[in-house]
Length: 423
Image (cartoon, rainbow, N blue to C red; front, side):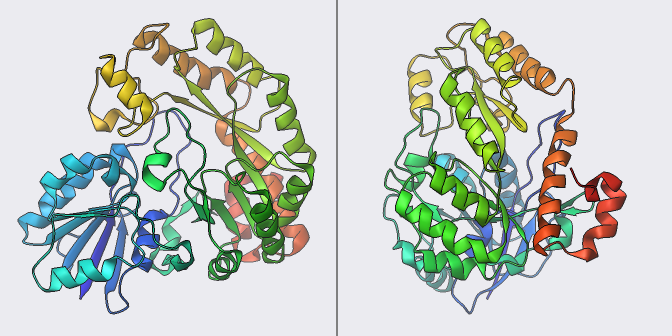
């Protein structure tokens, strides 16, 4: 049978450098399909959907709340043409009740070991409306290499530069951060993949640049140490969320190819300043992630935080406004307090204020969000700062022999001689 897998388009935030990464969820899901299922994949962010493509069954994988309305519209079009449609993915789980109105089936939870049942039900015309495996996690050992062969890799570049491939080494998170839905989606138990399985997955990835999408690598020191040791021979260059604040682990991460990390900057403490410095001491760049609009923040707090960012030598900064996604404590609290005034999921993009903040107006928070981006990048644009990080990683690739000469013309054309000059 032929299965058509689709990743819906969403509107990017205005004024920011935009590029498209090959999505991770759909190809992880595709790896869980039975071997006799032929899969074709369309990422609508980089190519148009062919609604007339021959297929038996359609799957729509949604990660972001800003994708759900488009996903529903895509389903309507396929169902109008007589196709059965199943939804899955993170935002399907967050918006399950609404999504059932547009679906023949909705899959909730992790797919490994479960898709044979779904496909058999489809073949027997007994498809269930909901397949609910939330909280019933498959054995982490069953998570195999993703189906990255489904990508049209030529579509994922920015000005001629190949983008990173996405990759995960664990699921679940033992932390429960206030605005985050991870504990609902993946559970409060950290579930690291066996390192030998991680190695098996890494061996299938041709791209030398990765984004390790785990919620945080800083959850199990022994596993993290072993992981980085095993990654060293691959000579990959990678981005991740937080790494353990431990000199031995930071040293191993650097040896394993850590390029830069996303690090939450939540206050102006010396700890944060030293945390950033320690990453830099090991040659690891830092993109600060800054959340604006929490109840303990007033206007002066936010401006003080932005000033602090300019003092601590961040390589990049990403600002978001607190967004009450469904199935988070933030959503429950704000809904109970009648502070959510916008329920259009297209606006739940972490750049548009959809609730009444506690210590300022919604308009003021929106102004401060714009002020944060403008102020931090006043002296050097976001794209220029990204270029600086990219230059460093190319130099490292040249030094360890992993830089691919076939990309040189594209890189030089896009970025000029600076890219091959020693920093």
